[in-house]
Amino acid sequence: MSFRFGMLKDIIEFVSALLYGVFLPLIHKPPRRVVIYYHNLRRQSMEGFEKQMAYLARKCFAVNASEVITALPNGSKVIVGITFDDGFISFHNNALPILQKYRLPAALFVPTGNLGKRPNWDLQEDCSDADEVIMNKEQVVELDKAGYEILSHTVSHPYLTEIDDIKLQDELERSKQALEQIVGHDIVGISYPYGAYNDKVCKAAKRTGYQIGFCVEPYSVDSSPNSFQIGRFKVSPTDSMLKFKLKLIGAYEIVKYFRRLKRMLFQS
Image 1: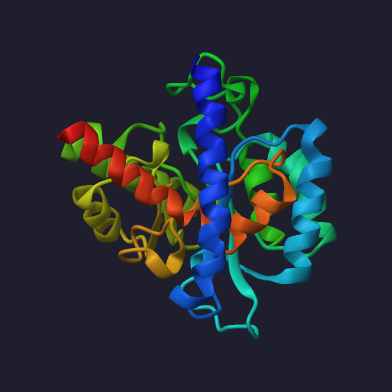
Image 2: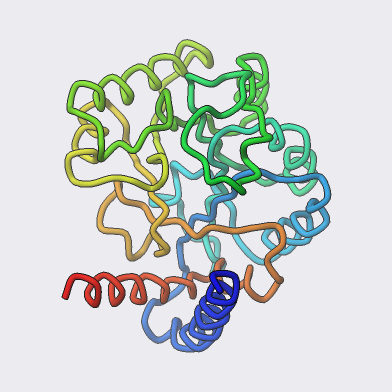
C-alpha cells in the first residue's frame, strides 16, 4: 500500500511540476538560480549521473554552491549549485571523474565526526547509505586542492532542532573548526542534517561565522527566505531526464505548496 501511495505521489508531483514549469517564465524572470543535491552514488547508476552532468554542462551555468546567490548571470542560463550531502566515498570514487570530465564545480557537506567511518546516525531500515563510508582527511584535502568546496554537515549529524543550545553551538563550532584545520582556510557554508532547522539554528549558524546555510526544502534560491535557508532540490541518478530538467529550472518548487497544504490539513 505504501509503495502504491509513493508511486501516486511521485506521479502527482511530476505532472504538477510539468504544468508549473510552463508558467515559470511568467512568474520568475531568467536567469533562475537553483541548488540540487545528491547523497550516495552507486557505480551502477553512473550512466544516468553522467547524462545529467553532460546536460547540465551544456545548458546551465554551474557555480560554487557558496556563490549561487551572488554569481553574475551567464546569459539566460539557469545558475546551478551542485551539492552532495554526507561526504561519502562514493562521491570520490564514482562522481568525481565525471565532474572533472565536464569541468563542473561541486560542494561536499562533510560530517567531521565520521571521517573514514560508516555513518552512525539515524538511518531508515532500507536506506542504502548504511553501506557507505565517509571520506577520510586525506581525501577531503585532495578534493579541496582540486577546487571542490568543502562545507560543514556538523559533527555527529544530529537533528539540530532537537538538541539543546550548548550542543547546537558545539556541533556548529567544532565541525567548522575541524574542517578549517584540515583544509587550511575558512569554511563558509553548512547544510542542516535531515533538513532540520529553525530560526534558532539559523541564528546560531550565522553567529558561528557561516555565511550561507542550505536546507532540503524544494524551492529555488530566488524563493529562499534568506541566505541561511537556501532551498535545494533532491536529485537521483535514476531520475528521468525530463524530471531532472524540471528540477534544474525549479519547477519542482510546486512540491512546497503540497507540503504546506498537508500541514494545514493535519493541523486542522
